[in-house]
Image 1 (cartoon, rainbow, N blue to C red):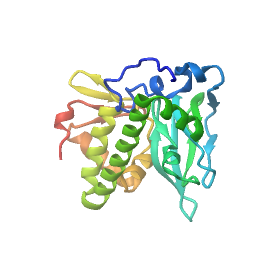
Image 2 (image 1 turned 60 degrees about the horizontal axis):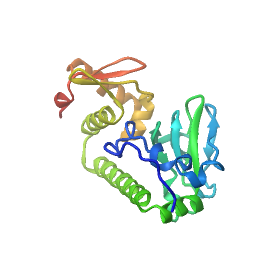
Image 3 (image 1 turned 90 degrees about the vertical axis):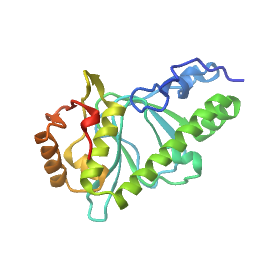
Length: 232
């Protein structure tokens, strides 16, 4: 039986606050620690490309990564922007054979923990608590994707923008009085891709929300003074 170090589990499924590293990385399992190496990447490098074999799952130990694809016209479309504690490439556990997107590093000195599917399956087989957490994680990722699709179909763009900011603040922001401060790393184009609109619309909506006193922002950060007042 593989021994698992204990970690902070209370906030397990909050993206930035959880330390999924405490349960995921082989360095936390004595049988794997000696033979496992973390991988370091520089800004602009790709971790995998479209149509690569889907044979590994990854955890971000430090840094930032974008999951993206390109249209037939060559335009880049962002699917998600991930940070420390985020897991990606998990569809390989569900039988995906080839990657359907790209994973590109967007911050210098990004460190990634990589497990092959065989390693992951062995960890899950030998540690039921670990397997439960990974299954829960994948289930929540799928439900989050379902909510995103539902929002794109049934909600107007202002609603999607507000819900995105609320979720982003609660998951990645730091408490600041009654509000949240987000040292964000998203461009207006990134936000537009994530909520299914144009960069110009995002700029207009952000300016409207700032004029209403619901948010304030600079090029490097966003402040939500009262998360409860960020309503429709």
